Image (tube, rainbow, N blue to C red):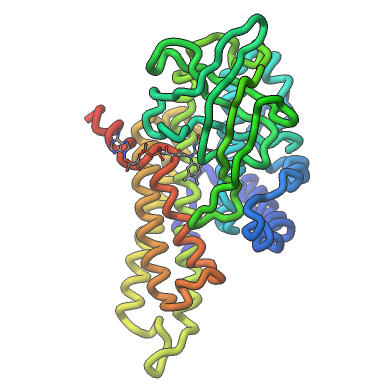
Length: 381
Ligand SMILES: Cc1cc2nc3c(=O)[nH]c(=O)nc-3n(C[C@H](O)[C@H](O)[C@H](O)COP(=O)(O)OP(=O)(O)OC[C@H]3O[C@@H](n4cnc5c(N)ncnc54)[C@H](O)[C@@H]3O)c2cc1C
């Protein structure tokens, strides 16, 4: 899709070669298995070990912790390629969780977990949302009570991506007073952890291959040295510290979905026969596609600009919120309009456009509901 429009200064030949490697790997190793993964509702954790060994899981991780020390654009290129191949959000979540440890962990915590998160030995999840609170994180009720050299965690979480497959979990729990200042993050190794239980795999309207689960904590004892950063009450600050880059892990997939949806739709309308020609021969179709191509270009331009700012250390929170809410709204609009051009076939789950339409919807909800982000932007106006 008009790729020359999307060139940007940060896309040098090295990163393009890396993109090509990731694309080839994903096409060969993941795409053939994706239907099975959708049917079973999860991607097995072992899938990520060779991906990590290839250097694709956390290419930006510091060399001291097993990474290549690449810039963050490399991670965003991985997300772009995974999304274009219809892979769900699992590795975006793994990345977010790993970066909490990188940014906030003690040196011992970093050395303990980051190399395994980088090579894929460990898959990470992050558990914030609870049945009673999502957007309003300050209301988190899961408790962590100090007991000697341990904390004891009680509570429940829901909608947790990688909840079923991960073996490392970052849990947001209340260690103190009500509100933001009473929150702390804990890192749990969840295999055979007494008191920890994974509930049912939740059935979703899209992104079926991504495991989304309920988690239960019933007197889970966690050694005190697994409090992230080692200081109580830092949780909310730690969560907020990574916001601009995390929003890009949503905005980039939005751009990737738009590009892919458009590409599929252009191909389809050029071969679908109707009224003595093809759908593409109709001016209404061509104008619609021209409009969507314009949106794709504007989205990519914004996303690429944000990536450049991120690399320059100049991506402020508000610019990242703008990219998240606006690109995800465009994603939903474009996939809807593309689906329309597929007619009835567009409504059949075996067609990628139908799956992309369904997968797009959640992008406006998680990572900060779009309304919440607009509210945050408005505070700075
Ligand atoms: C597929 C999927 C994967 C997820 N993965 C994870 C995960 O890995 N870890 C995790 O912790 N959570 C995860 N979540 C949860 C997600 O982050 C929450 O669903 C989201 O934060 C919204 O919270 P909520 O569902 O409780 O909705 P609520 O907070 O109840 O909000 C409902 C709606 O009300 C509106 N609204 C809320 N607050 C405001 C406001 N201040 N101003 C204006 N309007 C507002 C918005 O439209 C919002 O969509 C996932 C969710 C889904 C669906």
